[in-house]
Length: 440
Image (tube, rainbow, N blue to C red; front, side, top):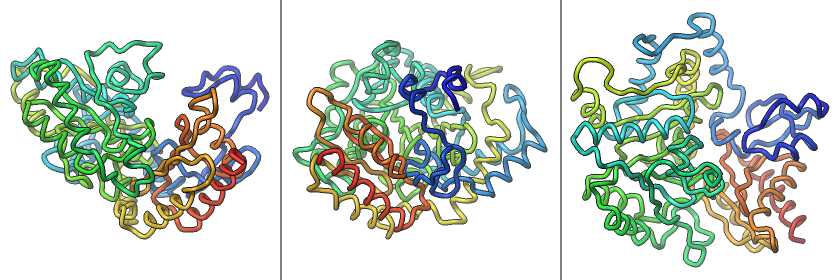
């Protein structure tokens, strides 16, 4: 494609001028590999954008979407319904931990986060605590790009041009290179101490003003930071002690990434509200879902009078094609054993971990961290150019036939759960070559 053909598209989270000067075009995908416009096969080590957990082009999912399009292409969701959305909701409720039995549909992770925040506010208002309007997020946390999400998110570039319009404060992030560098699995040090910072924030703001704490069980876009041992359980305890809701953002972690359907099950901590998207449809259709505890629904819905109880929703909530994609995706995860395939103690996860940690000692590598099939390698920053190294390593790897995700001075990997040992070997070979190429 020439420059004129690229001009109209304003691309998201992309240096548009740089891309259009040297475009990277994807024209097809199957299994673990992309096909590019110059007919190269490129290994996908990011599952698209953390979403294609069952790999690309699965025929069962494609056929389900096509069949649904022929049967019911769209159905309004305000005051009407279609059977598949109720069937999917029952299925998700059965898969979810604890009492997360109520499902509200969105179209993305960003919309799921804003929906969860509104649910938290509505819950407190219904119980006569309308002053609880402040949210606590976490430094380096990513919760989408809508105004709620960038308020509770902790990545400066995402909000510095737009402001943070929701009352908020932030816990510090959990990375500690002095104590936990090159951790395999959960970092061993500092979990409870980091979590106890929440007590200080509660003292600062008073629990009567705090609606919820929202965190990713594993920080994704902020650098892939697995929670230190004991961290999540201590956060849950503190929230319970002070009447504060806990929201888990499982947009990245959900649907097999940690070896269970949800990371909350892996880490044995049940939130009050949980956001999902991405892996719900294997990336084949835009869809998100917010799973709320029965107590949230009962306070907001059962406690209200006649009429609409929750003034919120989207034109495409529970879209029939997305519901069909989700149902088929859940079939694939279950029938192909993909939930457990990502378990931290599984053969492929251990092989992936071993390969990644073989990079320790290479020039420029300051950390390797992983949990199950999600990982990051962090590098020394370039002199005078902090945050640039990851992009340079990503470009070098792309030129050698592999897609990675750059996150400042780190690169992240979240491969499809269908990854095999030969894909791990290819990954480590390309990474080693790219690192040596960059650092000499």
